[in-house]
Amino acid sequence: MKSKFYHDLGFAKVDCHRASRCGFPEVIFGQSKTPEQIVKIAQKIIAHDGILLVTRTDKRAFLKLKKICPKAKFDEKARAIYFTKKAPAVKKGTVLVITAGTGDLPVAEEARITLGIMGNKVETLYDVGVAGVHRLFDRKDTLKEANVIIVIAGMEGALASVVSGLVSRPVIAVPTSVGYGASFSGLAPLLTMMNSCSPGVAVVNIDNGFGAGYLASMING
Image (cartoon, rainbow, N blue to C red; front, top):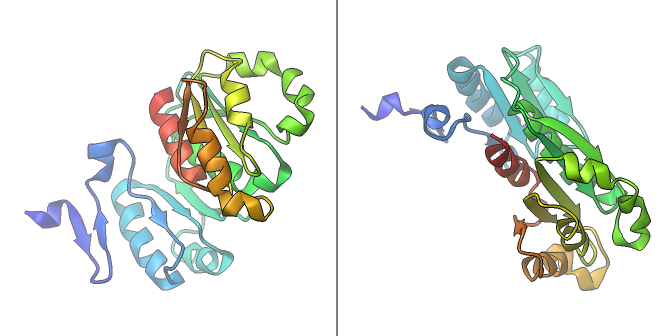
C-alpha cells in the first residue's frame, strides 16, 4: 500500500502523492544533497509528474541532471533547476515580486522561478527600497494591479510595511540575510516584518524565496 504513495530510494522517500494531495509535486531542496542524490530523486519525480523544481542547487548537479533530462534549465542567480513536460495552466491574477535592493535578487529570482513553474503571471519591481522610496511611489499603478505581492528586503526590512500600507492586497514579506552586522544575518528584518503595524503582511523565513513563491501561488489560485 505504501508503495503507491512514495518511492523508497534508501536515502530518500520520494513523495509521489504530493501533487494530488497538495496541488504541486515534491520540490527538491538541493542544499546538502549530492548531485547523484538529486538526479535519482529527480528521475522519480519527472517520471511520475512530468514537472521538476530543484532549489538551492548548483551547476554540478545541473550538468548531471541534463544527462537524463536534456530540456532542464538552470537559473544561476536563483540557484534553481526546473523542467516541465508541458506548460502549466496559467492563473488569472498577477504576482508582483519586489526587492528593496539589488543584493536581494537571488531570493527574488528563486520566488520568480517558483511562481513561473506553478503557472503564475509574474511581474518584478527591483531595487525600490526605503532609502529611495520615490522609486516605489512612481510605480503605484503596478502595485495596485497585482493580485498578490511578495516583498523581499534585508537591512531593517521596512519595505514590506510601506508596500502593505499602499495596497488592498496580501503582502508576503521575505527577510533576507543581506545587511551589516546588526542585521544579524536576517534576524533584524525578520523581526521588523513580524512586528509590522500593517495587518496585510505575512512573513516567511529568512531568504525563503521558494516558500514565498509557493504561498503566493496558492493565494493567487
